[in-house]
Image (cartoon, rainbow, N blue to C red; front, side, top):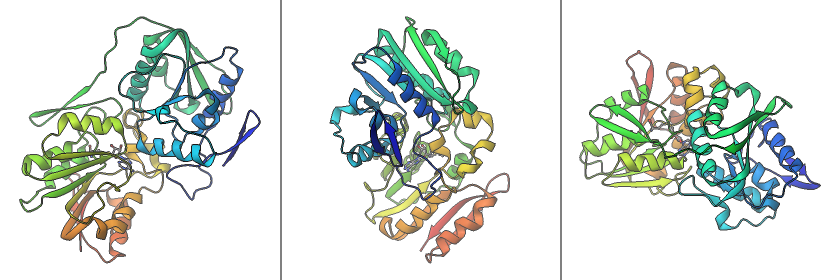
Length: 387
Ligand SMILES: C[S@@+](CC[C@H](N)C(=O)[O-])C[C@H]1O[C@@H](n2cnc3c(N)ncnc32)[C@H](O)[C@@H]1O
């Protein structure tokens, strides 16, 4: 989609691509951020962008040579692709993960994530490197406003100002940073006799997801099942359970979220291979005995009806595939032959009774056999798929 900024035309695309033409790769909050930065009288020497999902800001602001902090591999790929397709040169140091320190900066930009934990984590990161007279600009759509955004911001900054709303978007402008002791906070989750650790903004915010707990009750790994993939591995609770059952198994964990992968490294040890990726390119070799997954399966148009504690704390990319909630099952059906040995199988969680028929058809249409299992609420919840 075309966008003109400071007399230059850009063509910005979503990654992963979508056939839904109403899904723009930016919103009014991005436009408001650009307007604000354009109106700033001071020159900004060093800037950082965080949670710029499709690289809209990085591309339009290329003259500032901003550093993009990315948590999701898919966001990194979006930024890289949009730079290349707009004939811009991306230096390797212009993208970095949210670990380690940032260079000194005088302008920080956060596209406010829906997870409040993640917002605070990003704010801490910028606060550490911001110069005395630096400014942080945070953009959001007003429908996602919660007073907690102001409370969190006020912990770190003396001046927290809200802009006027424009096209249902608003900015928080943060200046005059407070002197506070900071440390990266990990969250402890007690489950069984183990405490799982995770970074903020990793699914599921303060407990092990109840549906995951059911999947684990059903998961029984045989000694002969040595080569196993946990796709969408989050904090690694499923992979850890597999290794407790079969300590010699080779287990691959794949997750799009860097903070999820780093969390799983704190919870899963021997025999594990960690992959920060949004695709299966690292493991697509037909040698797997078992693929287990609790993927994002909520349809994007159902996200607004979620309970507030899920919507405000869990990262949307852990919940929805930004489509009809079935895209991971389609990918598994397409890739089944490339992933699994002849008697290998998939064990997948899905979204309950309403999704059962659709999930069943996806696998049966490619000639695979399915078996379903109910959870404790008597809802269909887990599917096993074999040749
Ligand atoms: C519902 S959570 C499950 C996490 C963990 N397995 C559990 O059960 O607690 C889904 C996970 O999928 C990850 N994810 C989303 N899209 C992905 C993709 N394209 N490739 C890999 N992981 C993805 C999210 O980052 C999130 O950690």
